[in-house]
Length: 74
Image (cartoon, rainbow, N blue to C red; front, side):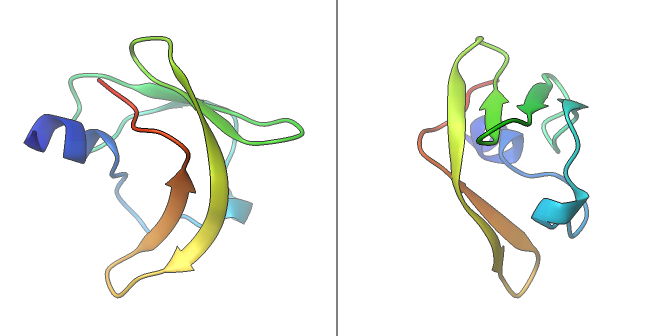
């Protein structure tokens, strides 16, 4: 479970304006995911599944949250 949870976390305080297309290394460094920019922002996980970003820049006490419509898997 911790591997899946850490796959959803990236180091830093990244807002939507900081996003760029390409591979991202999450805290679970065993697998990377890909950010895809277009008419909507999507994430392609290591299993080739795609999740869509449905909310951005939700400020938490310890970082920024971007909400996905499904769980991504390493």
